[in-house]
Length: 109
Image (tube, rainbow, N blue to C red; front, side, top):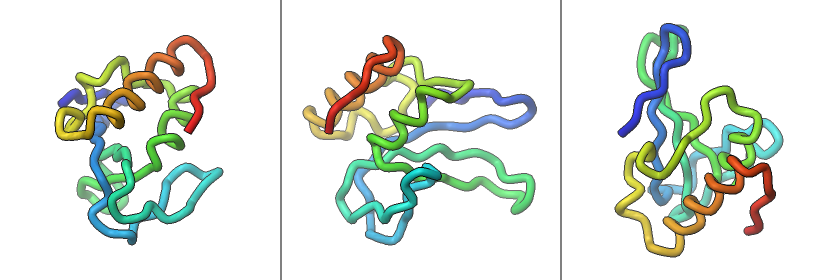
């Protein structure tokens, strides 16, 4: 698990399949429900307002899209907690998405 420092705060990024259909995508342009079993990416960081760790969940595609403008980009899959537990096709999707963010191309799916 990689920790990315953002000033005095740090965050971790994880990937998993949604355990329920209750979370909403945190990407402002989306905000849709992440369905149970759907691949999702979470960024966990300390909230100074709640004084605890909080996770913002994203659809995998929305997270990869948001990475294009992010200050702190995911460098490769080794920075993603839970990556090894994903199905091979989802690992490849994330791996390709990270590479496309680096190269400035757009991913399909």
